[in-house]
Length: 274
Image (cartoon, rainbow, N blue to C red; front, side, top):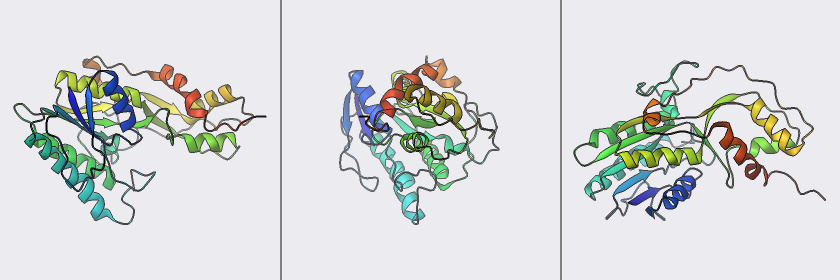
């Protein structure tokens, strides 16, 4: 399949690009393309939209001091891209949404597939409105899906825990926290299943409920760091269940994937030893 991929150079897109190519798909990345212009999509059977314009290092609050531009690029630009894909003859679109569409719900609320969006941030609102706009385009010969992904981890330059690991290894204070996490390879596997099955609608994508205490205990085991990990966290977390992806055969890697990835994620962080 010939797949157009936006955001291929991003922290998430790099996992998608590698997985799509490994499965033998022809991937057309969109270098130089921006959310404020039309994309070259002719001849592509599918579009996977993972690009997002934001202040570096931030998604929630990623609008910085220019919320109007943030909305224009990420909501309006995404909707224009979806329309371009349909006009170009693509048969499928998968949009990388976010668990932020649920943020206004009380912490600890169970989140099965089909839970209505309730965003609290501008980021979550933009994702929810782009989802709705994409769903409205769905029709005969044009399958649309959104994947509500939780925080993505995995090896790579500037990965999400690089600062956390550096602080822990240096003995700086670490605030307790528990959150949901998903390996980038498992996200890519989920998107490939959606494409393969022509699946439609919104899909939750999450795996581990991970406490920083447990994560950094693994780091301590691997590095021999003398600093104790922070205490276990007590914050409530709304956990997404992923029945729709499971029905397609999706099985995320859990702790095995995390443990296999940690050595590569730690290697840039550990100082050279004499």
